[in-house]
Amino acid sequence: MRSGSTDRRGRLAAIGLALALAMALPAWAASPMAKFTALAPMPAPAIELKDTSGKLHRLSDYRGKVVVVNFWATWCEPCRAEMPSLQKLKERYDQDKRRPASLVVLAVNYNENAANIDKFLQAVRVEFPVLIDSFGAASYTWKPGVLPASFMIGRDGRLYYRVIGELDWSGAEAMSVVERLLDSKV
Image (cartoon, rainbow, N blue to C red; front, top):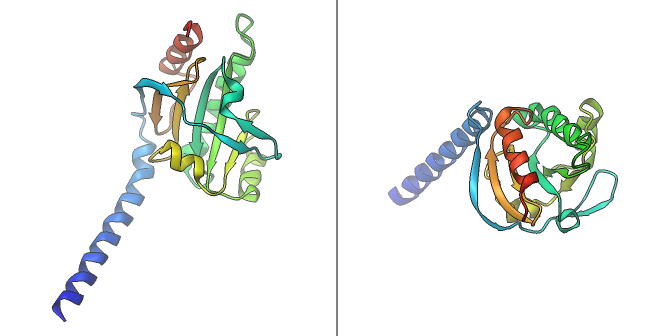
């Protein structure tokens, strides 16, 4: 009898810990401390997902461009807050006469249906592809950990940076990283 009671207490403790972590992670991700973490350059995992209009996007289609892959969800407050900043980043490089259309933003929605995503996009307009990862396959492969999470891919298709949490994509650090990747010869 004692072992059943102990097992139940252990399970309850594990559930309590999981709930506490789940509640703490969005606050941690919203921290203004979000920074770029340099990665040992490695090939980026594949992405093959449809956007909200049904168009198929493959990460490999964007080879030769710098790509920001952003994992997000509509229920994630820091994710929602970060979207306008990602839009500004896209606009800035769309207007770059030296390197037109050299930067791509791909927003990978984590495990939500198209109706929820469309409702959000009616309120927050973005001009970059919003990809639907309904079953979490891309998230499983990329392992973002918490949301939002972004990855920077160089023109050569390799991962160079990771950002965990909300970032001001129009800030000096983001501009420096993007410029470095755009100016890279690889």
